[in-house]
Length: 539
Image: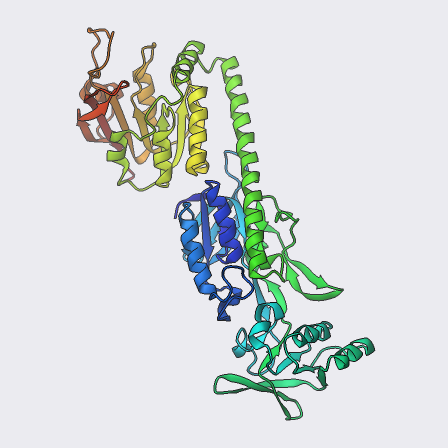
């Protein structure tokens, strides 16, 4: 589990996994948090689910988890205890989701698919048969009790309608008036016309013999033989965790009768609170599994479109800010033109792979904050972000930064990388970082290496590291270089930093070689100068 995601989906049922699938296929970073209490847990099979008719709910969940994993979606078995608004300093919408085990995670958006709880009538033994031979939906379970002796337990004004639906499946239907309202003359006539028996009096117990429902007991003591009992529970949305966001459920009504509550949302699944979306039974209490799957797919697409809009707005803002920096003199025009022209020469300037020395040194480090100086086309920043680092990636070239940002979106880690434009000779990123990486900050232009590297050292947080890697010699395929040019040794690079030994530890000071391929396919040995220093942490 990383520190942050584009979307955290709370609830791993049909709607949640379907939404996660749509988002994962759009290359979004997604975390699904599932507490393992689906509404249909007591049901042995799911019915009326095309291509999965009769499949156990747990099997659908396992298959869904495997499918979303193919697209990089992470699923954790945990309970969310709270979600609060915590907008990131870089702008946009943000949330912090707290788990019961003490962990927390940041999210740009929330998708709530927690479902609902069926609140059953207080009849002895009824809850223990729920999802087996105590049923609620003729379309979900009716076929399985066809031609059986079915009872309808009236708790509201829809009992007569429910009795007629089950009458389609069996000739033997009894309506128990229980605590429901008196039947209207019209309902009584319709039931009589279809041969539905009406039994008055309150039901006190369901009778079970050999683990099968065999009847219902009335308050009078009479037992009416039945093989299945249909009830209409109160439908309570599982939305308590939204209290910290100021989002409350509303009453759910059908034909003027309140059957429970739901989290209100528009047809796209967006709630009144920006950044919070819902799908499935938590907002549509009567949705079947198939409807929940469809809703998850719809909301996943809408969520991605919402994030695309925000990503684009940020890109426009960065572009405008870059233009303002140019006008203010924060960027040297000659430097910007040189690097933009260099990147414009080719569709891809570099290999797209992270620098070897960075991988060697950072692979075993715990994820934290990182500063990538001269990020180029973003391979190093993306590699770090994929390992959970929050990265500030810096370059002077607008072309390079655009390519990097696009690659980060494709890699699903755009939320973990803050791309900034700096001419390091004139401005330097603010903040302290657990890792500062300066990979090949070498240029034919005039460049104050010492000032920049010392600024890099000052940006290292206590306990953090500064990694400097430079070319130690021209590559074998280089042509037209000046033979008098001399590359700095690792010792000379370290001397430029002028570090206080009381505050710093030198962990690596060497000149390793590596095999590489040149622009025309030539192979050869390259020499690097590597300096790795660590700032001492608090005593």
